[in-house]
Each structure stands twice: as structure tokens, then as C-alpha cells.
Image (cartoon, rainbow, N blue to C red):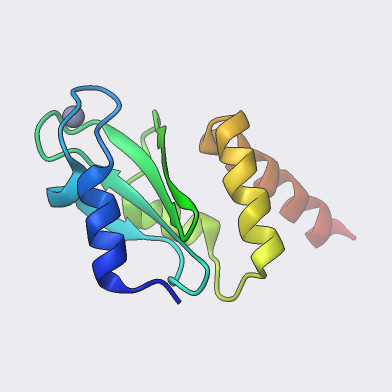
Length: 117
Ligand SMILES: [Zn+2]
């Protein structure tokens, strides 16, 4: 379980990809609980650039987001209730490789397949 203090400290060290401001004061919508990793949609307090912030005990990362979705909509899309450590690691790695938007579209497709089956 990540402590709130740890998350806050890491957020302060995480800088906006666009203007370099600290995200300590960013508007955040957490997408996961902090069991093993904490992922949130963040809006920069200075330039309003949107990004996904990932904080794990191993460190933190930031991925730019460019879409029309709001933080709450992301939460709905991701819809994580309980995820395994492996799944979070996969997400963490996947976010480094491609934008979240692509992943969400893939998820939608796989959900459609599921419904038809
Ligand atoms: Zn910014």
C-alpha cells in the first residue's frame, strides 16, 4: 500500500510535460487505489495540460494525454475495481509505449467482441 505522503511527495516531483510546473497542485482523478500503484488523470494547475501520472514504489512517470475525455470519463473507461499486480505492471509498461487513448480503444473493441460471443 502506498502511503498518501509518498504519493504527494512524488506528485510534487512530477513535472508537467508541457510547461514544467509541479503537479503537486494539479487537479487529479485517481483511477486506481494505491495498493501497488497509483494512477491518476492530472490537469496541470498552470497550463491545463492533461497527463496520466503513475506512481509506484519504484518511482513515478508521466504520460501526456490528448483527448476530449475528462478525468471522470477516464475513470469510467478504465473501470478498474480490483486489478492484479501483473495487470498494473502491464498498464504501466503499455502507457510508456503508446497513448492511453489507443489502449482504451483496444479495450472497447475487446469488450464488443465479448458481448457478441
Ligand atoms: Zn503545465
